[in-house]
Length: 450
Image: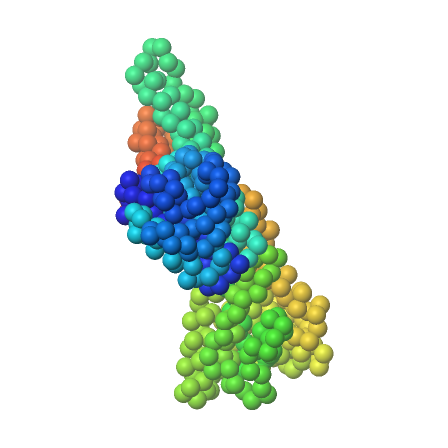
């Protein structure tokens, strides 16, 4: 799979019909394939488009289109590369790939073009992974977050921190090896340097959690007693009749999940069955799913009927969710406010699903609670993979031990081992120590042709 002596080919545009389909070729035989399968009046030139006829391995015309040639290292992969733009028929695109394979190329594996870009030094591994995130982005915010990593900013930050750790270790080693010539470091300044690096790693952790929420979406469980207006709220937020609404308690028997975009980020709304003590067997199964959705949600949107005095069921839901990140919505304010008196502290909205201002207040509250009260900075590079999170966490543990040693007044050279462990872990976070298994895991996420 990873033999770069092969020349690879694949369709680079999504499946289905379109105006244009792009077939991508990369590798040492790309120029020979271009000479054999593309006929034009003018020779191909680096980073110029030429119009001509694409033929198969027998010289039979397949289509007329454009060819873009890239001399190494100017193309995406850093190798000699060819892009053929043909009419967007799936049959035509597949026939072009078939002809390329018949002429000596092989079919590319998922992510192999980007993998070659990484191996040829065109991208670092964090930027390569950001390509997949950019393709998978479901919102503008997710695209911006992926773009922040695409420039390689995360790897640069981690490498800068590694360099600072290396400088501290070198200073300690010099003082230990040449005590008569090199004075020992000041313990206060040394501790400050270690704690400053740890503080920056903690910020990377926080930004990484924000990035995860942007990519995956903030999961919001809409819970409450029957007939509080949960399904009506889902429909109002979506702007369509997605959930069945009825005055009969227990109408919603299963969870319904839909997505909206709030401040540029995806919010995954889960409408659930009303929670009550006495329910038939089918409704009880729905309530059990409600509890599972509640357990997996980052934000709980509690909906109660605010027009009536709070029922025992409503009070039970309020008690059950009081330790969660939540937004309380006292619905049906257009019918009265008997249930909205003496409200608990926190994000509380009183209003109606029929009122646009109420819906805006609810989405604003979801954003505040979902982001932990902060507006996410999507321009900063951030951690993405479990490998990166684990590496930063392990580095922080090592630095914490080093800081504890220094605080106890122990000799400074005792922290060298911890600093070296932190240095090694940051190598995994920046992918400087990436192995073949890590590469396979990253590029397995990609589509064929990217």
